[in-house]
Length: 251
Length: 214
Image (cartoon, rainbow over the protein chains, first blue to last red):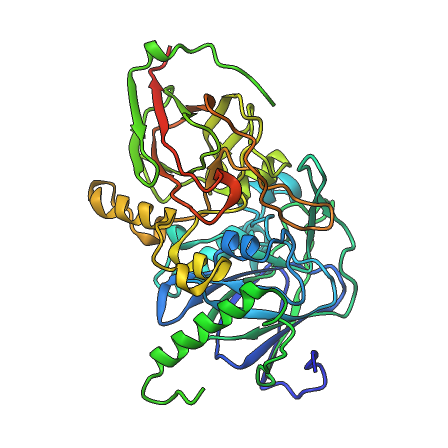
């Protein structure tokens, strides 16, 4: 079964637009993101909670799977050759891996100056500062901010390498599911994608739910999506055995 | 874009040949120009830049490609920091295209890409880690090792969103040149990768030349 949509969530919440949050997801759980109106952008970063120096590595992820876009079947790799999570469902068909985050200047230039002083809790934030806040909660900072991914956003490139942000790439109700293969600290912000051409600040939230994942079988779609992923899973399993040596490992 | 340089090698203030598998770590002052010369062809120079004044400001692949609207680097490309500021400008390029998506090889990623038993082969990220460990004066650690530039590498993207690793388009004597717009630390690993056809399975030396501001 590839979808967990019928499963009862262990935990769920709505993250408003222009906001940020973080959660540690245990191995064996799935995070399900639902795009309520089709216009959300969710930027994500991933860290190993036991070793914060291990983090999502965009180039390793792209090159080992020979892909520029991320979608169902792809795995998200750490810099240590392990799989944080597998994309088990992607209704959009294209998760952006190159757009990055908008900073204060970019947001001001595109959608006007914003501040708490003028807007109070309706203040619309920028993705870069939003991630800095989440990073700081774990003793991390600017130096630890890796290249992120953007759910529900599509950035394609033509033969000459010119980038194009595709509007309406996601529709209302689209779901993306990430199945975690190791314990992972997930940082997220719902601030808008820096390439979104909307004339008004796109202020859209996301629904997040955590559900129990089915055990990974030998014929698992993501594990077998590419031969590289089989090796990535093996690295991850070896690490789990070593890091939980007292409680496992009967593979 | 092919653009030749007016600078003469004999007028360079510094020249250093970096053998395959070694690193180069050096400060470049604002206004100085750095040339990376592919001496024998098809070599990859995996490079990171940091602001010398505050190394938490560093080259950002995401900001650079997004703001120039293109994934490839060549003459005219401004290399931007994580704060969106111009760090360097590519002023000359006889190769025509450089990659900033593919990242650097590592012992760990080699196990995934090639085979679990490739773990103990030399890799760029090892060279960078040795560089930061041997040059403590810069205050850099593993957390500063980020998404880099691969000078002389050709990693084309397909319309369907694929990523392909092609034979290098560089050759003996080709070079890329960049002018520093702020004081920067250059950290380059001259790639020792023996599993990738990009360098014809034959890592070779590069030369780093620096000219002072005119």
